[in-house]
Image 1 (tube, one colour):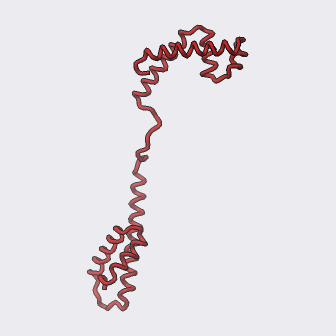
Image 2 (cartoon, one colour):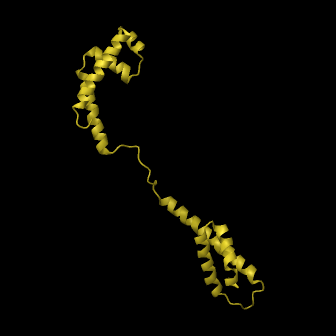
Image 3 (spheres, helix red, strand yellow):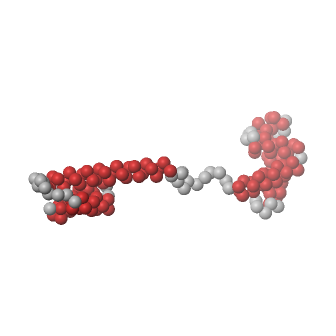
Length: 161
């Protein structure tokens, strides 16, 4: 009886489990379970009995998969997600570059340094910088150009830049 019903049982199990290999595994378990059953007293509706047994085994398989997945999710550290934190080497290099940049800024004349910091670091507009320091917008542009060239030249001396 099982051999005659096997293909329809596997198709039904595959729909229930969502996987052909899982359906084959459950069908194999069904075969082993049927081999151990005595037919005393005789089973009246063997097809219904096989279908019920297959459904029960599929339900057990789904529960086991759910427990398995929950167990491994609980112990699975964050999957291989790249970290936004730079490596220690990168942090050290960046720190050294920042130190060199700050040293380059310190070498600038005071007014040039003030203009550069207000414009490029604090993000003020050229008009705001000019009004705050009492200079023209053209003078702001000139000081920024001088500061950028100076810092760029100093950073070029840095082999890691």
